[in-house]
Image 1 (cartoon, protein in one colour):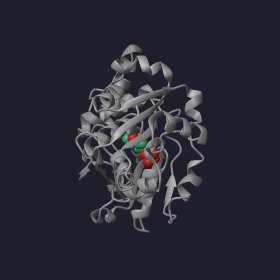
Image 2 (cartoon, rainbow, N blue to C red):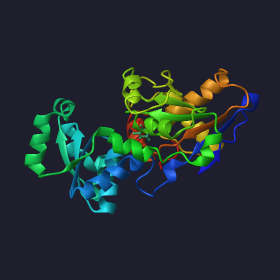
Image 3 (cartoon, rainbow, N blue to C red):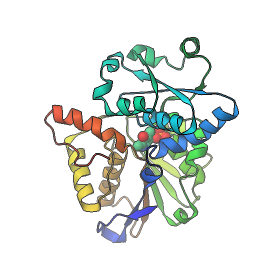
Length: 298
Ligand SMILES: *Cc1c(COP(=O)(O)O)cnc(C)c1O
């Protein structure tokens, strides 16, 4: 569903948001798209266990737990940070994932860094038996195939399509599914010059670019002005955005409009990739630091 953002922009610019966050009651947004063909592949190959990786508030971890429950897989989450083993009750993401049946394996940051090594994968197999591996953030060829289903024919009338970028899987699917006369703009949620080359490996078009100025200090970093922006945007539009991905993108889009980046009368479509589940955990931290919190939770 594309929803018009009812803000009066200059020069006849129109902004719509695709509410892909509403595509499923629990497995919200792009992480479901990325899992779809991976889970079909796992089933076809006869696997009953899924192993994947993630951090403390990972949307991908919760989506994998929910999808595992819905489609009949055992799920194992390798989690970055040993200290989190004692924090499950306090961490809304891990708490929900556990309720959905996910088994956790907490590892140090150092082990986590080498999680894709042959040795560590062998160790996981010794520990858990055979499994289908979904990479961190869920990005692989099958994930991109799933993300090619985000755009519908009606969306070909937009001049610009904007989306938040983490590993680049989602934008790659969108680029592949776009029309050559559309421009796809990615807003990385992290400092990431490697993303250009990474995305190039997955796409066969050149109608895209990255806007590198709106990462707010890096992955998982938020600033007070971003929280203030999200609350104001919500009050004006009733659209809830997460602070780690979609909030940074929307801040960027609106800032670029004010700087005349887009031509007059441009029709822009922003993709809402979900991620609202993480707000509860982030609000806990903001509260502890006595900072402004986000006024909606999911
Ligand atoms: C993971 C995630 C992204 C980034 O997707 P990539 O395919 O890794 O680029 C964007 N938005 C949300 C809400 C996410 O959880």
